Length: 273
Image (spheres, rainbow, N blue to C red):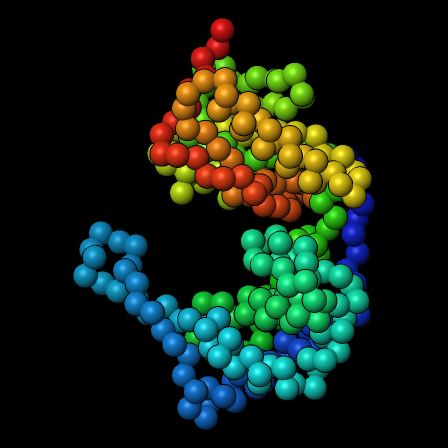
């Protein structure tokens, strides 16, 4: 699915800057813990037959947020922030994670660095530097910041929707298909927050994604128009999931907000006629 995608190369300057920052952050955070600063923990139930057993979950992101000024004081922080800003990866990186994108470039770069550094130690109890984890994070950064216009289709989960046919094509070219008939990210097929039971069939709306500056916005507008048309066609509760997804490589996806209001509680059933 999708047009031929170029093999996007890593930005070597950005990679090196983030690697240096990760190494210095590892040393600084390790020193802070050694001198008495504690990583906060939460308590969660174990996934097992008994609810009487609990486990401690390290809140590493909270620790890093509390010590963000320590991160900013590192010698490699300024060069890393400059590399992020000049490469313009901050906005798509934050968007791909569903996070707010500051309008000011320097602030965007700082937010991206905070999220990236946190990801290196999420769920860990110490700050040793795992090179394989750094490399994986950099590979993820490359995928998450690819131009969404390299894809030729946008996929949006439908909320509250059911139908008897397995696929329908509408006059505007939008297709509605069963989720298990196409490749899609796991996040898109999850029933969490949709009011749909895990065993119920999920449905997607698919629309073309033009390779123009305005292509993503036009695709989202068409999907929003689909929801309005369905609501006018018959009674029922139907909407879009919070994000739509575009394929940007093998098993790699970019997501963008659908900006459609959530549906009322209930369902919408379309019968083949």
